[in-house]
Image (cartoon, rainbow, N blue to C red; front, side):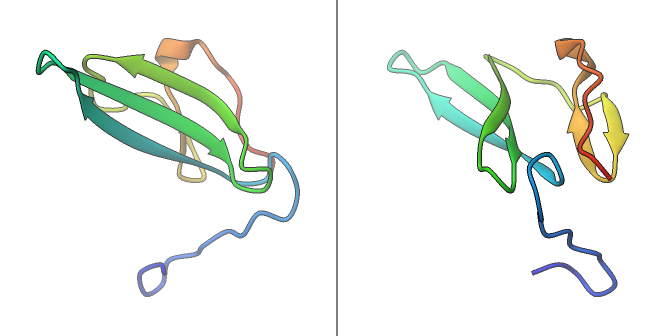
Length: 80
């Protein structure tokens, strides 16, 4: 549930609303492994995933609250 005054977009068709999520795991040797996944909310398809020992703060392009990191060289955005 969104905060008061926050607009929550419900996906009505593919590529309409994207979301992103960070996941972090520890390896058997104790190292850190982080993943950043971008998901199409309508199809539940994983559009992109970045896996690295460290993923710094997102400094990518922002469009309607969706982030596409510059590190992927992507110019993709959800449809409006």
